Figure 1 (cartoon, rainbow, N blue to C red):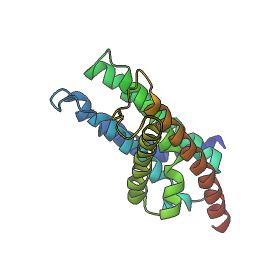
Figure 2: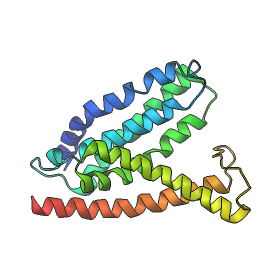
Figure 3: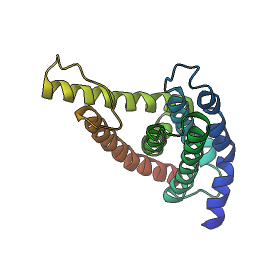
Figure 4: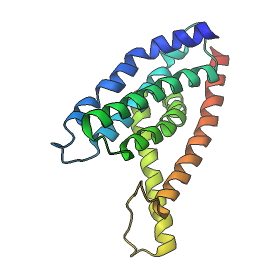
Length: 199
């Protein structure tokens, strides 16, 4: 088990390094980019790509196969390490007082770890899985907007996600994303085990 886990972690290393390096220019030049959260999007896309790369058919069919919980553990360790490094880089190079960006970075790990494996196993195309997973998370914001409109009326107009002062929009987004993530995590586990059984 330990040998398999360390082998999986070694296999993740190239994607892990890419996950660290791609957001780096957006971190360093964030003021020149108008303060837009481009680093968030880069990091989230890289995290989803890292996960998708480990659930490609070619990687899964390697022998000996890794059990679901061990594979998720290895990918989770890589994602957590990437989020820590991203947060430290942001606090060191960009804005030492901004704790919202590290919070968002850690929060993005949940959909990356839970949604992407299932979508990758279903589509068998890592790039398509990353795009579709990002689209599904975006749809959760749309669902949150519908909830806000149903509660406050269609002319309410406040659909921001204030990370430091959660409102109904943010709570609905978190709830919808959590439900989607947990559902697809279990579906992905079943699909992965079924695929291992056929190999």
